[in-house]
Amino acid sequence: MSSAPGPLDDAAVVHPEGAERDMVLTLDVITPLVDDPETFGRIAAANALSDVYAMGGRPEVALSFVGIPDGVGLDVLEQILHGVADKAREAECGIVGGHSIRDSEPKVGLAVVGSVARDGAWTHRQATAGQKLVLTKALGTGVLAQALRAGAARAEDMDHAVRSMQALNARACAAGLGRGVTAATDVTGYGLLGHLWHMVSASGVAARLDAARVPLLPGALEAAGAGHVPGGSKRNLSYVKAQLRGEESLPPALLTVLADAQTSGGLLLCVPAAQADALVTELGAPAVVIGEIVADEPKTISLG
Image (cartoon, one colour):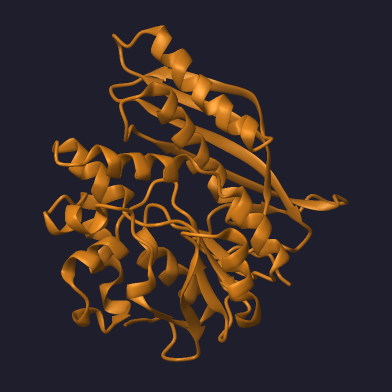
């Protein structure tokens, strides 16, 4: 199995000469989606670590980055870093250094070095017809965060979103490794449709997506239907529209959420059909089979 990454894979893969495992390297930085500094730190760390899990790897060490505006106290910085360290500790990833700057807007992230089995990375190039698509987290963090900025989000809906964003993808990665996953991505800035298109494009295959089965966070459809849609999510839909088939059959709000830009989203796993149900059972809700890889018109996504 080749581990040569595709052009838009989630992380870089390096083959150190003589090493037993390959290196996985990634960098991710986000701006706040919540007011609580410690929660912001946890989400930022989970989001950055996710790229390693999306390659089938395990995080090893990381460098932290924080941008803090003038006027924000050191107590806030301490809380953010406590959240980052807490999530890294859960991932058994050591933070060995970092850098902070003064910036006009808060920013937090990690540069992560992980490892993966030699020539065993999950890359966008390795999706094959006949595999099932399993999504491990519900969608909607982008539209819900936009609704929050507008003062229109319900507290209980945001609680669901925050719990999802703080959750590591470590368990989903481990389960995928045990069930023969060959290709994966984490659903983040390009939305589900954008990231799925990256995989089918790199692999020269197509996908069929059962839109009604895609798990959604509570309140996500309502937020999208009310027009609380980030600019990035709108651009995502334009980005993939030419590759979609059957999108006119979907309610506009649902199509919007399928393209919604996510923060710390779940893994989208290409798993052998015979292992898909067992993988979903092992992970439990909200993980679900949402479609399949097929040998139709290459580089397209059929929606139904």
